[in-house]
Image 1 (cartoon, rainbow, N blue to C red):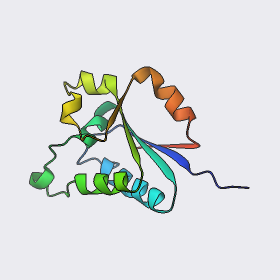
Image 2 (cartoon, one colour):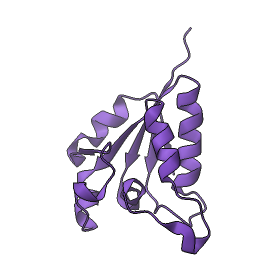
Image 3 (tube, one colour):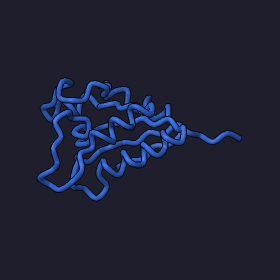
Length: 121
């Protein structure tokens, strides 16, 4: 029996300052991909802020997520962004890191079904 390794992590909260924020999610995602797992980060709701190019949380005393995002992508992880969530927050694709893939919201169920596990932060 083979171990299932295709995991989706759904990020719904803003980038910094939440108990279950994106920093914890990216740490988990990096650990999984480093061990050979396939991980897709699906950014929806306020989670879309996670992929913004201009992140500067120094005023909050928190580390910047961009280094961890870069590690995740270099290890083979994928980032998908809900198009409706992006638009409803007044953001555009150019506001996001280049590797973020904008996805039509209607395809969310298909994306979930492509993975063995879905974890939500």
